[in-house]
Amino acid sequence: SQTIHQWPATLVQPVGSPLSLECTVEGTSNPNLYWYRQAAGRGLQLLFYSVGIGQISSEVPQNLSASRPQDRQFILSSKKLLLSDSGFYLCAWSWSTDTQYFGPGTRLTVL
Amino acid sequence: AQSVTQLGSHVSVSEGALVLLRCNYSSSVPPYLFWYVQYPNQGLQLLLKYTTGATLVKGINGFEAEFKKSETSFHLTKPSAHMSDAAEYFCAVSLSSSNTGKLIFGQGTTLQVKP
Image (cartoon, rainbow over all chains, first blue to last red; front, side):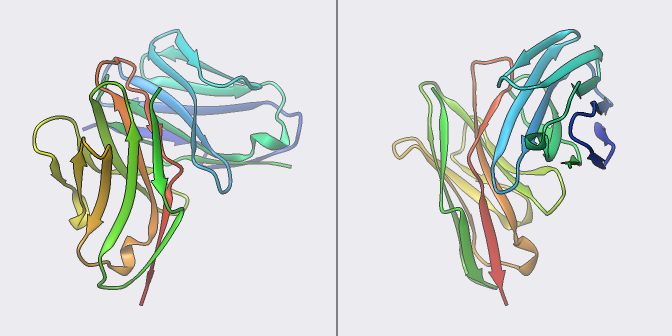
């Protein structure tokens, strides 16, 4: 069966510090991968998606970036965090048009 | 362009009462439709989905939804609410013709269940 992991589970970072969130999927190959953010009181915002290694599509302009160095690894990064980057970050995977399966999420607080 | 509208950001029902969460979508091609549930500080869990075939879809935890093309709706129902159903619910749509699997989510509906 497939499993999706995210770490860390929680993170408190100062403004201006770098960020690296990691997502890995087990039990499948060549999945589509996605990064979402949930800000307080708001819905899900798709940040990035990837249909293959090294293929990243950005949905919204921001100071975040994503990379996919391996087939089942998806990384969300920032060089300098802003207060507005606080939120709940969710990684998900899917096979093409089928269901997206979500990880447990990372709670990021930028102070 | 696709879009999803969930009517009512907060819905409150009594335990044992009918749950009805409304979702309307806009899509120029046949859509795939999904309902997800999110408990506090957790990821989203799939409740049910419609791709093709039978328009009444049954999911986990006693939930079901009916795809009505003429009304562009995919409302979620459960005959009798349990306290454990209190959570946030998201409706989502994806293009059946796209290989990216991108989902467009509604803004979510928080379900409160009163004893």
